[in-house]
Length: 342
Image 1 (tube, rainbow, N blue to C red):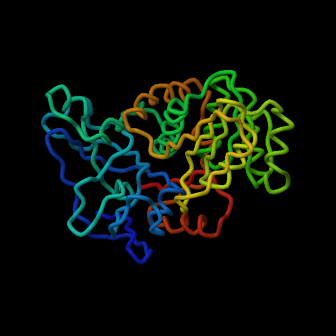
Image 2: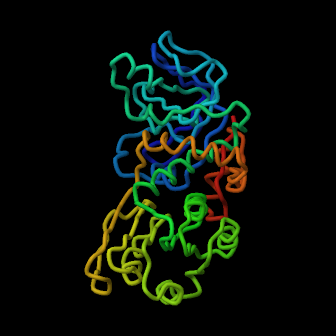
Image 3: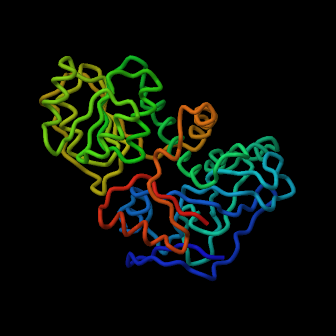
């Protein structure tokens, strides 16, 4: 089969002769339909900047959607033909390392519940592998992985109805935070970016206010909107200076939340201009069981027409053209979620 691989020198290519994934009694073989491009995680792995990924070459891709085509003898919760999220190729060939490996034509899901019912302990990743309704589009459904990460992260951060929030960074992740904050009843929801096009998208997602931080002071603009301070300030892009800026505009006992992953993994925190009591909360690696806990709500919102994955997707490329997606990222061209179609 074919897989997209990054090497230690940052070169990437499609490898045409990768062996098929092996599956056990509690696993199912999945034919991949699509995989979302994660501009944050994928590019940081490519550039050798993702914490914890030290060995190369890496088989990339972690936002996969596929259909079950074969299953092990003890699989009870997946059936042939099921559309599933987040396959994970853990047993990659010797000499390679797994970055979930879903930029591949085939991958694996594990029946975590069947294992648990038999008294076994599944790997944590297996709990995030869930079925989708049969009529969901397998390409746009790649966006559901981002939706689940965002909603589960909001719960970890403790977001509440009626609380104020400012969100920096309006890619697919930041816009999802905006949308879900409004659905949760947070108010006001302030969206911030340096691109007017993204600010317009934030308005469409329900943002009460938008701030172009390239043209105006974030601190002054937020103080004008929330003179008593914010309840939550969220970095959704990985911009370390935001922490100190946010500390100037929060109220007592508020929280500065960091979800975006910066390539620079240290910064000096200056709390001279903030209240005495506050929290800095990093949550950058969503727990797969928590994502599964958000799955049904996301599916229901899509069924109800409240949420449309297509609103967050700007480009769809065939697997052979995967480099076009990464070229867009390299050139810093405006883009939303990009999806690779198999």
